[in-house]
Structure formats: C-alpha cells, structure tokens
Image (cartoon, rainbow, N blue to C red; front, side):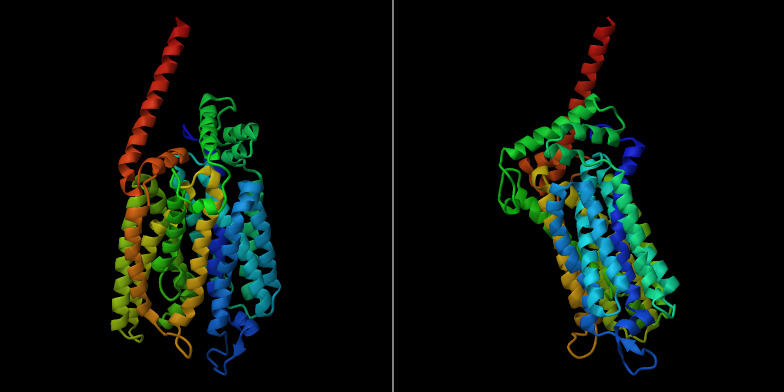
Length: 519
C-alpha cells in the first residue's frame, strides 16, 4: 500500500498475530503437563519406583507430544480451500472453533485415546491458523512494515510458550485433575479472544478482489488505511492488485500441481522455497527435545531434571523469557537489515552454538553440573539466535513470495511442510535421545546433526531466498519474473528507485495541476 497506514489499521492487522498464541501455548503446556504427577497417575502406568511412581512409555510420550503436529499438517493443507472459499478472516474464526473442540476433548479425557484425539483436533485448528494468519497479515499490511507485522505471529508463539510455562508452574503441584485441566482449559480463552477479534476486522482486500467483490474490497482497504473509499491512493492500490490478478488469470486456473510447474514467474521455485524454508526452520534443531528450542519447550522439563536443576519449571520459564524478548530484535531488524542478512547471520550463529554444545556435551559427564549448566547457557544463546532470525522470518518469507492466484495453495503446502517435519522429528526424538531398550540413546551427540543442518541453512538462504524488504507483493512478483534470488539485492534497489521516481513524477503532476487550477 502506497501510504503509511493509520495506527488503527496497523492494530487491526497486528491483532491477527494473536493466532500464534494458540500454537505457542499448546507447545509449551504439553511440556509441563506430561510431567505433572496427577497427569502421569491418570494416563501412565505404575513403575514400582517410590521416587517416580508413575510414568509413560517412549511411544506414548512421542504420540502425545507429536500428534498435534500430525493434526496441524492436515490443518495447513485445509488452509488453502478454507482461505479461498470462506476467506482469510472467517477461516481464522472457523479454525478457532475446531481448536476449541480439541481442547474440550483433552479436558474431558481420562485415558490416552481421547486425549490424543483431542490433540489432533486442536492441531487441525492450529494448522489452519498458522496458514491463514500470516496470509491475512501479508495481504493487509503496508509494505514498509509488512515484515515486522508478520514477525509478530512468531512473537505471539513465544508469548504463548511463556504463558504456558508460568501457568504450568502455578498448577503442577495440585494433587487433583486441576493440575493439568486448568492449563489446558485456558486455551478456550485464547481461541475466544482471537475469534471475537477477527469478527470485528475487515476481510483481506486482495481476497475480495479475487472474488470479484470490488466494492467490499474498497471498503476494507479504507478501514485499513483510514482514507476515504474513493481516495486516489486507495484506488491506485486496488487497480495494481486487479492488474496483477488479471495477468495471473491469463495463465489459467491454478491447482496444486501448478504450484510445481515451471513458469514465467517461477512459481515452482517459489513453492519449493516456501516448503524448504519451513523444513529448514525445523531442521535447525527447533523440534528437538533435549536440546534446542522445541526440545526445550516440548521436553525441557525432562532435560533440566537430568541436568541436576531441581526447579525445572522455573528454568523453562527463564528460557521462555529469552525466547520472547529475543524475538523483538528480529521484529525490528527484519525491516532494518532485511530478510536475507538476518537469515544468514542466524544460521551461522545457531551452527556455532550447536557444535559447541555437541563438543562440550560429549567431553563432560552428566554428573558435572557446572558443565551441564554451560550447555543450558549455550542452548539459551541458540534460542536467542533462532528467536531473532529463523523463528519469525520463515513466516515472513512464506507470506510474501507467492502470487495471489496460488497464494493460498502454496502457503498451505509451505506450512504443511513445517508441521510434517515438526511431527516427524518430534515423534522420533524420544527414540533418538532416551536411553533404554529400543532407543538410540544419542543424547547430546544429536547436536552434531543439527549443527550440520544449520550450515545447510546458510547455503539454502544464499541461493534460494530473495531480499524482499520494502517491496509490495506485486513488486516481489516482478522480481521473480526478472531475476534470481542471488541477484535480488540489485534488482530490489532498481524496483525501489523506479517506484520512487514514479511517486515523484505523480507528486509533480499534482502540484502542476493544482497551480493551474489556482491560475
């Protein structure tokens, strides 16, 4: 959009980031819930050990933690038809309803089967939101701050994780079912707030134009910008969207297969970039349990207990605080330094941290508490790098790089990739990390693998991710048509210069016309 949106318009767009709370809170809450004595007594089996009288098997632990990601995978794929047929706005509202059904099942359950089904339904809702919320933000936010706005989705995820840690700490010692039911039930609040808020927001103008509802699109854009419906700037923005859509329509109707076909505007490259960046986000080690980010947030309580730190719930809160506050530099930096630079720096920083943790971990004993705490310190540094770079920017990239005609389908494929890897790694990790029969017992050695994948992230970013800072979604489409990601910095500068010159000519024209009228 050509002018800076009003504060009210920005607040509207930013509110949709609240959807990240649903995913973040559920991620964090299960880390503590599966360690609570009453939950283990209800859903686990007796061990005969007076210290830990009840436990669950590695297979049950894997299922409970990772099954949400299985639901989110299918929810993300459903995001495309939902976004195209009922819209971005009402799609998010529908996702909240599905999520609430899953929460209700988890609260009512007293056995693993219903609890797992509830997590599947909750996953469907989270998957829908994770596709629709960044899409809504990208289509409604002004280009000058779009990256920061979409980054707020990741920030909301980190806030959800922190809130879950705080609430788990407050209830985990309760001797009845309230210890785990209260943290789970609070998810009704997040879903209700998001659904009610979205009902008050305008629909995406780009989706309305795609549906042929130009009048509603003009009204929605007017609410977002604060300018009158017939304002020349709004009309110019709407016409740019129409022209771009018409060019895409000339190529014919799009299908999922079209997302992978070579074309003039490199849709196949863009689709694979979106799918890959979400996969690499997980392969940085984010989903691993004993160690980096989701390892901490899914299985962090278990890890800290093994490190000799007794108040593990409080330590999980501490890592959550690191995650929340280190996302803020990323929100600022994405529009200050650009997408590519932050992704490259973040991947390099995570790579170094991963290898340091791996090397230190294999050279010290578990009884060496000072050494274990050094590992936790480097995990926190890793979290800082992830939170300020790959955490938010992966969502920014997937929200920006797709043309309108295939945006819903391509985004759903990209987000589904995130959840597919999340599920696969999350399910496999207990078997890789835990000791005992049938488990690989890799422990800290796994960090050698994740350090290597972080190095691959550097190569992927350099060759496949364009610099899109400050460009409209339509300008990004032009960039893909005329250059490759490795040359995107030069072409971006050219596009911005052309846009600046056009704006100056338009201003001069208005001034001349105004002077003629006065004469």
